[in-house]
Length: 386
Length: 86
Image (cartoon, rainbow over all chains, first blue to last red):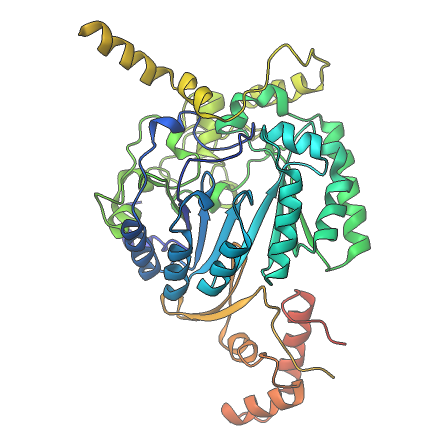
């Protein structure tokens, strides 16, 4: 797509303020080598990003990370975003969300808080995030409601907590959440590294979905429950990001602009940085944002498929992770010649395994550095040269 | 009958880039047509539906808006945009 007049403006700006995080969740979508990208934009640089994105038409702004509360200037950033007219969303683990910060963010105009939980039980919550945070999260949820914020509870699902989905819904109701997002793990970043551990069975998913349906019919509109089925179990791919470069603009902590949360892992693309290019240039003109726009980039079977209009070819990151080429059809699609790879993963999940055979890899700096093989090799070579 | 009021989780605002009113909510947005925008911006907790209809009919110099407005308000309730009527 070369004619920029056909490109719609971005609507949803995700500001990943930092990769630092007090939790170490095994299903995090952040890049496994996040320690290679530890630079962070300054307050003024973020202001510039907000102003430019808003001027283009972005209306939603998510503050995320890592844990955005680790930025001391979060309140100032929220205030500026709200003044510009964004609907402001704080996406947080709740760790560090004190009464004072809640009060200051309310005053700054924060519109909504999404609080993540790992499970309804302390043991599993603490195990999967590799910390002791469950009690703290319950206290934080109560404070959020006391300050009058709309609250979305988000719980990432996988084989360990799918059997508890009823208890998770009870917990969301008890906390007064307006929405509950039961988001089945998407296998990118750390979640991809831990895929063999986290992948549920088809039976677990069916059971959980039945529980969700039962609750939906019982609770009416008290709390809206979203249940996102993991697409490995589907025959057609999701319309990922509503299409590449269609509505979503992510900015990583170091200023790298991304058309999806996990695009950074894709080979053969150079992502622009907000320190070097305007948001206007990035969105409309950069090679990275235009690469998978529209239909011209598609290969078969997408190219001649009538469903390309509705699914936009699926997910580029999944195509890369499972087939080695981001321009291939998302292998979740049953029409993909490599759909078998997805079937194999699902079948593997149904087999009984020794849980100790492959230890779960928590998201932390030490693991990130060891996953960053390329950087490690470069450093080793540099040392041997000198 | 209670006054019509948007739930606090929603924010209605004019978006110049879209030349339309939009309804914003956590991580989402609905673009509104002109009549939906005119109705919802008056759902601020100060008017009952009859007052709202009378006001719109005067503002747009159109005498028969009652059915259209009632239909839309029912739809807005169904979508969970407005506080429940008691």
